[in-house]
Image 1 (cartoon, rainbow, N blue to C red):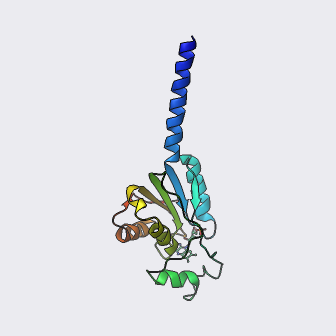
Image 2: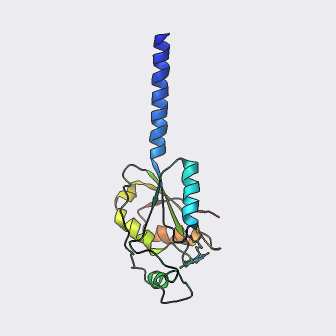
Image 3: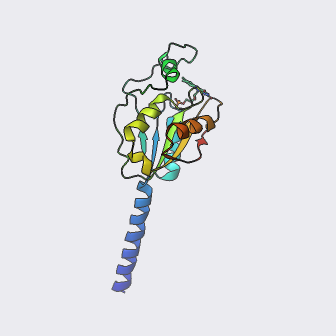
Length: 165
Ligand SMILES: Cc1cc2nc3c(=O)[nH]c(=O)nc-3n(C[C@H](O)[C@H](O)[C@H](O)COP(=O)(O)O)c2cc1C
């Protein structure tokens, strides 16, 4: 009887260990300026039993910064210049993960430049990861942003993107 109990204990320990390992291999990374993508990321992470990591800009985006009607606003200036790489507050430890969901709001049909900053900061480690883009938007599809990411970072393994409403 003792032997059976011990075997059951071992079986349970191994299965929960491998479950925990599976869980820890997926990370949900996101940037959100006004909270929509954060809410989507939290729902997704909850469904996947995965941790989240928020890409926080070194300098917070104010409402004026986000005014897309103003061509001189910070977001307009950044989106008009492909080489812009807004600074990020803290770096992410992506080492333990092999699948990373990358979330962002659609800005001008693509991802905000801070997503480029995050990718650039994490190259070349990202080359061994599976990357799954997800986004929130006013009405645009995610496809243009995924095409842009594939074209800009052709050595990364981009999967089909998901627009979360
Ligand atoms: C600078 C800027 C540009 C945007 N461009 C688009 C766009 O091209 N297409 C679209 O459908 N929505 C656009 N939006 C709306 C956002 O994608 C949408 O509100 C998103 O859910 C915001 O996510 P967040 O709250 O996580 O920042 C834009 C918003 C901002 C601030």
